Each structure stands twice: as structure tokens, then as C-alpha cells.
Length: 114
Image 1: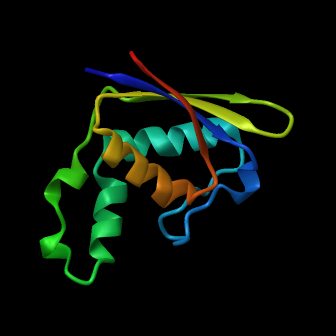
Image 2: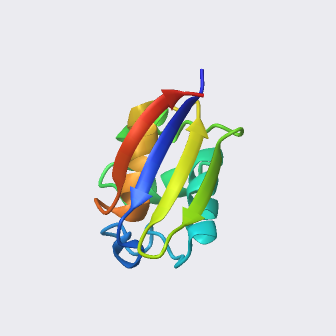
Image 3: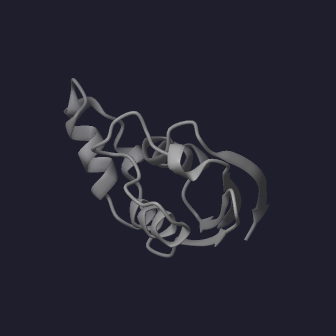
């Protein structure tokens, strides 16, 4: 079953993970949405993160799950960006990907069944 997550990036310029190789590169809402959608639909971000681990072969493979039907839409406001994410990925996988991309510079404002 899919879940709808309502995410706010209160300071988009600071929405960057601690590892620049894995973090958001975009500046605007559509770019953030596209990067996050790609991270949920493909194993690319997971594989790059896994390769950086001390013991890549010991990483829990369930963290590499993907949802080809994930969607992310963005609404750009004057000072912040809202993202609406619809995915069937487990919350732990979704949040891990978002932390890699944005660090702790995001807020979860609501979660609903999609």
C-alpha cells in the first residue's frame, strides 16, 4: 500500500546531506523532486551509499528496495519548498534516502495513506 508523505524544506539552500557525493545538487523545487523521485525509483543512490560503507557486502539489502511508481511533486513558496511524496517503500527506506539527500534539513508535516 502506498503512503503519502508531506515534506517541507524550510531552507532549501541548506537541504544537503553530509556527503556531497550523495546530497541534493538542485536549487529549486522541481530539481529536488526529480532527484528524490529518482532515489526512490532506482537503486542508484543506494548503490553509491553502499559502496562507501566499510563492509559493503554486509549492508542490509532491504535498504536497496525501489518503487518504480514513486512520485514526488514540489510546490515552491517564497522561503521554502513543499514536497509531496507517494511511495510504497517502507518508511525507514524512504527516510534514509531523504537523509542522504537533504541531511536533517527537512520536516515531515503529515503522513497519509495514498
